[in-house]
Length: 263
Picture 1 (cartoon, rainbow, N blue to C red):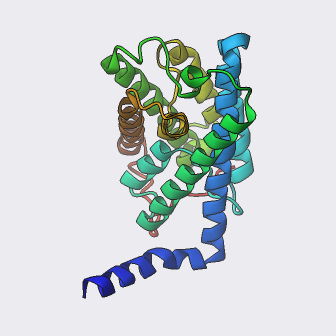
Picture 2: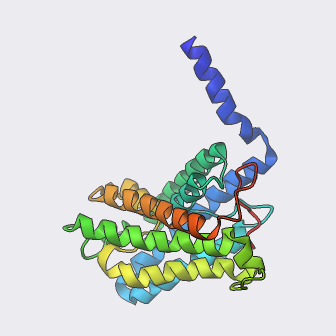
């Protein structure tokens, strides 16, 4: 009976992948996260010689471009970050099954991106920059936690304000703050601002996979739990705050899915 129940549960979990739209959704999240981890971590490595601007602007512009690419009807909404997906899930704006497949897709893409970068970069010691560590991360886990929590909350708050909040994007009798096509740029700039603020202290992850994937590939687990926990909880905080203060008149759609056509 236990085996039979497990088979039924697994069949139900795999069933959504039979749909073409779901397949494209997962591929978009995996490919987008792969490119983000590969390129953003390359910027982090290059910043060791080129300066922090390379890291901050490289991360921000990379994310903005990828959101433009993987949003819309043929994409996935381009979350590319478990902190964003978790915030959407806990506010009822993302279906549970789709959430699980997003996390799986993002994780696979991130690990492949980290592996690819390790193969393609020169044979030098880049573990420090690549694992997204900064000045206080090794000896001050509480400071690292606070930095990553606040920066990730800020990024997810901007995601909700510009991509989830239809009133903000499309205007109302209250105010018009940001046209929809500029939402990805706003999110990218939020990451860049967070990087400018936090890179010297923590490396500026703002995404659990930006710390976890290179930690796995380079096998450097020092304080990684701080990064993963802080970014996930920060993402939830940013989502819950915006949801409960500004989205009380915009309940989640009936199928529990956030609007994927964000641009």
